[in-house]
Amino acid sequence: EVQLVESGGGLVQDGGSLRLSCAASGFTFDDYVVGWFRQAPGKEREGVSCISFSDLSAYYVNSVKGRFTISTDNAKNTVYLQMNSLKPEDTAVYYCAARTRRGLVLRWSSYDYWGQGIQVTVSS
Image (cartoon, rainbow, N blue to C red):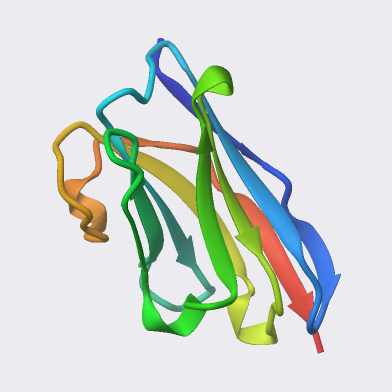
C-alpha cells in the first residue's frame, strides 16, 4: 500500500522553526518529485516547495524563499521541510505529495499521492 506520512508539525511562536518530515512506504521516491503544499482555513491549497529525487533540484514559492528548505534522505525514503523564521501567515495544514512524472511543478492536481496533512500553527 502506498502511503505518505507527515510528522513534525505543531505550535510555534512567531519567528520560530519547525521541521516537517514526509516518510513514504509502499514505494521509493527514486524518480519522483515530492512537493509540500499547505491549506489555511478558507483558502485554497497552495504549493510551497518541491524537489526532484533524480537531480535534487528544488523550487520554492516566493513567500517562503530564504526561510524554508526542502531536502531528502534517500536512505530513509523521507523528505524534509525545514521552516525557519515562521510567521503567523504560515499557519495551515501542510501536506506532502508525490508526483510520478518529472518536472518541478506546484500544481496540486499534478500530484498522484498525498499524505493526510499535519497542522502547523504560528502564534503572534
